[in-house]
Length: 119
Length: 112
Image (cartoon, rainbow over all chains, first blue to last red; front, side, top):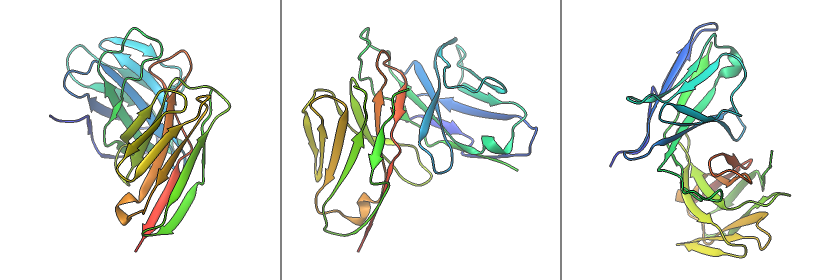
């Protein structure tokens, strides 16, 4: 039973290029979350998606960042025109369907992350 | 945004010692989770505490959720080198079951 898969594990980009990070959730999970971990900082929520829908993008930078979770295929976090400050570890997590309660304790299972380095 | 402060930030101890890591907030969380993260990997869930005052044990690790659900602690008995890693507490912000707020982290090193 494979866990959350992320690729690539390491990505090097020059300033101004685009970065595409992929996340395949665990089998049977329909909810995907992206988090960013800057050097020497904690993980910060970026976006929460369900299939074909962005549910909460309150943690996404206003420009250059976008995310999608298509009907088929992995979730993609896309960073356009990368800058050095985008260098970080980007983690994807997945969970099964949430309960109807606002106070669900649904577990989020994390992938190994993609380490983005911008030169 | 609800914040979670962890202390200490860094802890270096010898094998066999006991330690406690604290996770504090001024806000109420519906639940708190503890993760361990090893270098180059994603966080791995250790435990979820839901009820105020709840205590959960996982082998040599004891987790407690404060009565008011604003704080939590992780106690490790007889630490081993395999316990080395970054320990993170995390909670769901009030009104959401999807957005995890992570603590600042405690980096533990256990030496022989």
